[in-house]
Length: 231
Image (cartoon, rainbow, N blue to C red; front, side, top):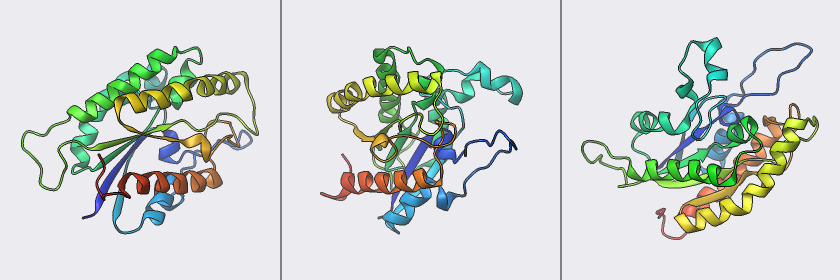
């Protein structure tokens, strides 16, 4: 049976390319060039990757700084609050990839590690507790969970913000690995595929999307490699 995988992410799942300061223009990579499309191509017909991505989305953080120009509520960018309706829209779901955390760190590079882990834990609990009014044919009782630790910050363009964010990401990673083991969810380190970033130091370029897509496909294959079912 085809595995349906939901990629729940931010601008780096949406496909947001770095802005060119000389000629600012928003550019979004097409699906086949985004990491999700690259992973889909590698995994083949036994898997379907669905996307729900929003630039600026965080794990559990309202974004009043994003809301003003869009006439939307600050909670729109709060991944935890938006998650239930996203799950309902996309069922049946076998695996949820949580591709969030970059904006939490960028908004507050001094963010306490325990606070970050609490946000991840809330996301994991909400996915595990998700229920429809009636059981849905073809959907497991609870989707498997794969949390993506953020890719590296900085690279071609260094700034105080990206330097501080990268320092926080490095400190966070071993604690996130331990948390994943303690709470029994799957974890993949995006920085293994994307240790640094070109452009603005925050968004993936085409080459980074390709590397991350192959990396994520390998992580997904590993989840299903033993029995064909994620735990």
